[in-house]
Image (cartoon, rainbow, N blue to C red):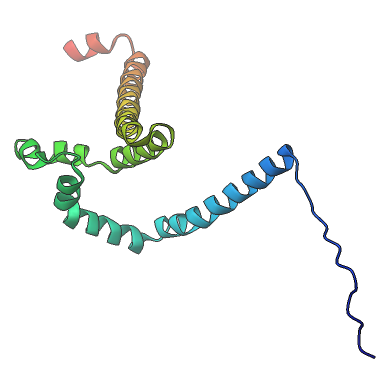
Length: 161
C-alpha cells in the first residue's frame, strides 16, 4: 500500500551552546591537523622520500634562498667558509628550527612574526647545540679526572725511578 504524503512539515532545530561549539571547533582542528600531519610523518619515516626532498633542496638551494629573499648574498657569505662551517650553516636542525619558529611566528604575528620566529627557532637550536657540546666536554673532563684519581699515588715515583 502506498505511503500517504505528509500534510504537515515539522522543522527541528538543534542549537549548540558556547561550550559545545568550542568542543566541535577543537574536534575539527584536530581532524584537520591529523589529515595534514599524517602524510608528512609518513614521508619523513620513508628514507627515499627524505633523500629525494634533500636532493631537491640541495639542487634548488640557490634559487630558494635567492628568490625568497632570505639571503640574496649567500654565495659571498659561504665563499670564505670551510666545509665544516657550511655544513653547520645548512644543518638540518637549524633549518627545521627556523621553519618551526617561522610557522609559530606567522601564526602569532604574520610575516614579521614569521621572520622573528625563524630567527628565534634557529637560535634556540644553536643554543641547544652549544649546551650539548659543553656538557660533552665537561663529561670527558670528569672522566679524565676520575681516571687520574684511580691511578696509584706512588706512580710518579715508580716511573721516575
